[in-house]
Amino acid sequence: MRDNTERLRPPRFLWVPFELGRPFGAPDEPDFQRRVLRETLALLDRSDGPPILDDFPEDAPGAGPTDMTGWSCPIPLPPAPPSEDPALLADILSEIGTLSPWQTLAVDKRGRTGVGAAGVSIETSARFLHDLLDGGGVADNPSDRLSLGQSFRSASEDLKTFYMEAATAQPGNATSRSVADWFWGSTAGGRLLLALYPVCSKSVDDGVKRVALGQLVPRLQQHRLE
Image (cartoon, rainbow, N blue to C red; front, side, top):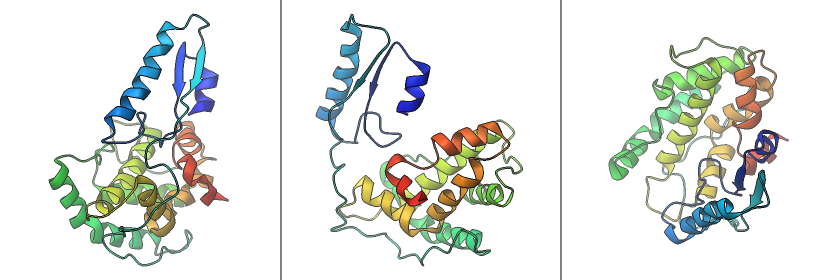
């Protein structure tokens, strides 16, 4: 988050134009990742700071225009309803049930999963997020170890990761951008997170507000908030 970095003024920082959660750009691109690492370490040789804030000059491999050729969602899901639709939660739980076998397949193939930060089931995370929407940015915390803001961040990340792991389980030419566009533009889960932004950005809980404003919707998907 460049705005946060400018405010915090760390001694040396390399800003990268990559997707949130991919500080080295793209998986399975060791040459590119090494270039990012070398650019970062080179800041230690600079004598014109601190602070130093440099920009990495390249986009990540595959970050160009979305190419959907050869890829589609493993399971065709029904169109996402409007966020105010009372059936929204039911539709999200239905999507989760439909995608669960594919997400399980993804975990079996990779031997790992990124789902689990919230420490609760994906269905519980979905219900908690929907409760935040209904409650104006406040809801009962499903965790006894995380703050409400941390639970919000972890549950939203778990929901996104669950969908995206399921979507990439099927063979095909799926770029990270195409999968992200599918989640944010074509699923009830994505619609819920978009609906949470205006609600939680005004939450009386400071932690929930910070997550909504800085971490909920990726930069490349923020045009959907307009």
